[in-house]
Length: 279
Ligand SMILES: Cc1cc2nc3c(=O)[nH]c(=O)nc-3n(C[C@H](O)[C@H](O)[C@H](O)COP(=O)(O)OP(=O)(O)OC[C@H]3O[C@@H](n4cnc5c(N)ncnc54)[C@H](O)[C@@H]3O)c2cc1C
Ligand code: FES
Image (cartoon, rainbow, N blue to C red; front, side, top):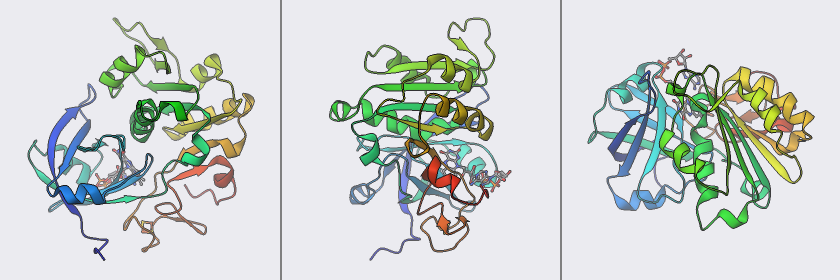
């Protein structure tokens, strides 16, 4: 059996600067050994530990779709030691990847349902993976209507602009992109995500909502979803806790009897309501 702490070695094939502040970058990684890519079978909503020699490792959600078999993408905001080391890399560098870890989004619940994605800031990453997965021609029929409400502080802070432009031209996704404050040249929506959610008012009929973003956005979005009729077992959220091992061994990420790395990071609101408020 493979040592679970041993990372796969991957090459950084492409680095995309996602925002004006240049502190969010997407890393497109290719496995040095093709067989390793075959082992790295992931679901939307899972994460991996990225490691940079001499700096350490950190958990990052998988931003690409499992349907993209040639590479794996991660979108990383520069925060501290490891993420800064990642941001300092050049294309062609070698790093380590361990995983995939976590439960991912529950496809048994999502398939056959209308999907409402509510996202804010750079937490859009795993929801971008889910959106791309649903929109793939091999999968689109297995899901109902897809509504995506995504917001950032300003137009320059919107990530995945290339995907947003592509999705805006499609008829099989209702896309609502908003910014907290507009600026010259911005012709899209202006307003906080929970307010736009209220205005768009997606039907809760046969629907599941998936919410990821800053705590304040989540706090104000949940009552709106509840008003719209979404029950707490049909609202999903992905938690970010401090982690170490990533696969349920070290206890670093425990909340009550749950390990966020293994039992999560995706939980229904109903599950979260039954857990101690330590997140
Ligand atoms: C399941 C999961 C998925 C994640 N997905 C992404 C992602 O897709 N993109 C991304 O940019 N980041 C993601 N994160 C957060 C990322 O792991 C942290 O930003 C990273 O660990 C910081 O490491 P560092 O060494 O750069 O910072 P440090 O030097 O360790 O700390 C710098 C600052 O970051 C804060 N911080 C450290 N770890 C975390 C953490 N786990 N959560 C929140 N704040 C933290 C510290 O409190 C400190 O203020 C995810 C975290 C988890 C648990
Ligand atoms: S990070 Fe080790 S148990 Fe979750």
